[in-house]
Length: 215
Length: 347
Image (tube, rainbow over all chains, first blue to last red; front, side, top):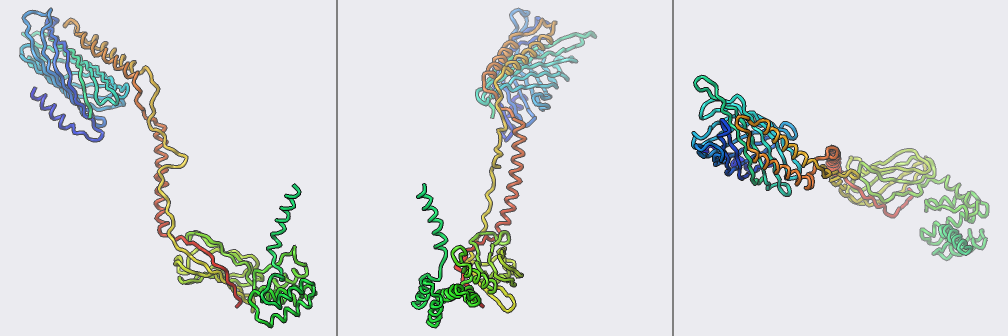
């Protein structure tokens, strides 16, 4: 979490407005659905989110962080305990065509208590397509391959994928915007216990609604 | 209608009548006046006698010219062509621009006058028009008529020096041009100058001068252009017509995300949360609807941008030419020529 705060502060400092550079700050609230290993390990909850992005020319640096309080779903097993999930996503994008860009990122997830779920870090590589609909209005879709996962509980994930949908609308030129982001993530984690392979998938969906300001 | 026509005819006839000046015009000398009266009474011999008597008296320069003219008219009327011609030659020497109206004067007189004109060497109708021009670029036109073939030498003489404009044989109407530069290649300074024309034919020579006032000033520079006349810049962005494309794109993006999520959900985990995608999907669709209603964003008009770049290129090129031309103009001098009343003299 400390790393996330440092990163956010660094990006904010780097965001000194320059010509042809746009800095966007945002905050909001997220709803989340988290599942792991089997359908009985099912959590839902919500929490605050923050974002900073700096765009300059074809380059864009986007940093998202959120803090979620997740509780077991009511039909989950009784022994489950709630936990908090902090996550930081840092993505660097390069616009390759008019609306399509390539994004490389790094994500880090902390879970407390650590026994409740998996903490992990991973690298992502994907594409993002953003369509300006009108002045101040935009919709974007993104997908990324999740690789290089490093889980706190061990194991590996040969396959992981992210899917995202973003929509933003603001009056006038859109300096102030209402934003909505959806992120779906599936990571097929595998562990080996007593010589046998065990499939422990992790899946989460997140809906963030917030306000942003650009300058 | 007839009365109007008569008035117009009268006005038309009045012009040559006033333009023509007969020897009977008012004279200062009383004897000469009597001689003129005698000529009017067709007493040509008496007119000659009285005129010769008047010549022995003190005559003003204008009366002198009229004296010779009266002799010329009278001798011609008496068919004494040689004496008439001699008298007209004296008239031309005194007043080289003198002419006779062939429609008003007897052919005997005009033929004697023409004979005198062919024998005498004078420069007639020496004229310099008032003008303004850039020294070395424009020119000052100089016109005159020479009555016989003669070597003509035309000079500009003044406080800054002198310049020979032309030196050549000429006859009849001569038209010359001075480029505004002196012999040293520099324009003259402000001041009073003279155009001196000298004619030489054998032992005869004649010279006349036209005084000029030359005003020296700076040449006007050209203003820089901010636009090319007739080539206005076009708007580089255009607002497209409102369409359903935004809502279509939003729905397509939502469908992609929804479909992808459903396809990627792990069956082992019992599906996935629908609440999140439905919330954001509905929001995205709403954004699409709002964007459709909203005024579309201006988009670049490539043809206009290309056109404007060409116009700006032309404008820059023209302004560069203007800069170069202004630099040249700042080194130039504009001359204002105002001719003064002409003074003629016999040499």
